[in-house]
Image (cartoon, rainbow, N blue to C red; front, side, top):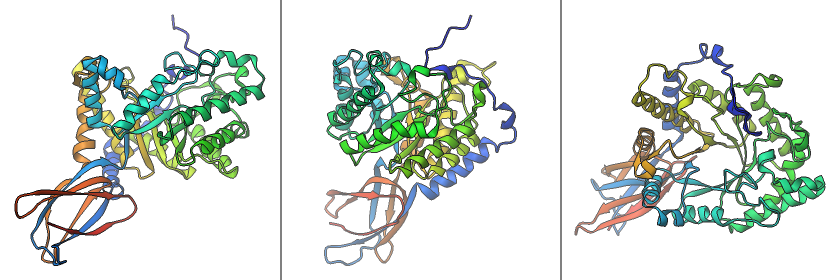
Length: 446
């Protein structure tokens, strides 16, 4: 007997409705080859440095090393830590160390009322921000890009039950307080927020009592509550990035009401266009990129291409690769299944990194990367580390030519330039390489 699903998690019972079209798509190998070319073109810039001495004369044949210290791209994971957890558990301390060695982004979770995820206000007026702010503190202390998730989520399991006794107008006032107070509580330290979660599948706050999943709200009705939420958020922190985040944009997985992934992508673009007309366009569009299956890479590129039509950057907000969603696990050993999972994750990240509109990739969950409570890492961790910290990481040594010039192509992000003076003293200088322009400069070597 099939267990009933929690309302708000109907997507877990999927149907593989896109299998027939997969045969007509480009192969993963073809898509990955194009993505690797995109990485070289879009994630690097030309760097030209002229090395001179203290009098301005060019230095010929001088060697410098350029080492990256941080990616411009956010590679995040929802399962960061807190100082209290690290102090209380040596395994958690080990996991946190592994986390920081790979990821440069984390989440601070601020669900209004969902019992699985640190509810903020299960009981009216009794707001609990301690764990949320502890996650903010930990992430900011280590220079991570902290993502707040989520500000507005109009699904039954995430809207406090005590709200139901009030009129819609009063509920909006409570929602406004929730949004404003969360942003204010962080001291503007969160630079990216999931402003609204899963609006394409769920009702507006006004229509929550009539929820009938998949609940396909009219665009105008979504604008009616997203526009004020955008205004409240920007009044509290005008400099943060606000994202609309949803699932089911890659592959059609339900036959109910005839909804398709392509239709939902179109609706997302239409929603952003309608919000733009009201002066309330989001700063990014997010795809959760899971919905219970592993996608062919051509499906991933198609999703990005369609979402790019919204005219805002793309965030991958909650990607995961669960073993039970393996497309053909029959006859494969546990070791082979782990290797397949690592390869799939590496392929997805390669396609995302090769797509210039993608600004963030966030993985949802920690079991994929950490084992034995955090003491060790997994094959998926090793595969992702090899990409992010080796293949996509600048660490080069070069010597200047007869004019004191050295040229190279480097990944976008923060770097240090290191060299050794004639007396053997090591020196270094920070260097930032940003997208959209080549970097030229002069470096005076001691």
